[in-house]
Structure formats: C-alpha cells, structure tokens
Length: 86
Image (cartoon, rainbow, N blue to C red; front, side, top):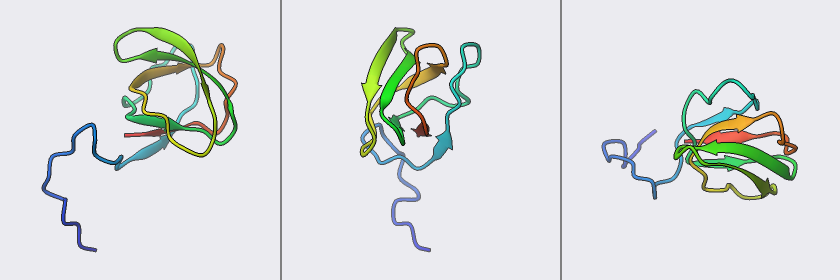
C-alpha cells in the first residue's frame, strides 16, 4: 500500500498511527505516552499527565480525547475499554 506521508515527521497535530489497550494500574506507567485516549464505556479516568499533574477526567465514547497521559490509575477509574492512541 502506498503511503505518501511515510517520510514526513509526525507532529502533535498529526493523526495517531498506533493504538494500544490500556489496563489501569496504580503502580505501572504506560508503555508509551498517549496522544489521545478513547473509551468504549463512559466513566472517569484517574490519570497522571506527562507534566506530572494528576486528575480525574470524565470521558465518553464516540471520540478520542487529546490527552498526553503517562499513567491511568486503577483507583478512581470507572471508564472501560480504554485505548491509547499515539
């Protein structure tokens, strides 16, 4: 398949090119930082951002949320089917 953008450096405004399942953990950071997060079922995400800030964010299915997340905590997270995009 042809990819006209294969040799272009991706920026933060570029679409995501990878996705991975996120299993919330109070001890383990994500394998890679997200560019966005998508969920299957609405709920809260308790997150640690790349800046080190922590917070609880309400998310709903249907569109990715542009969040640069380093860790999704199990405590406080109620959303399910969490997918990271990078």
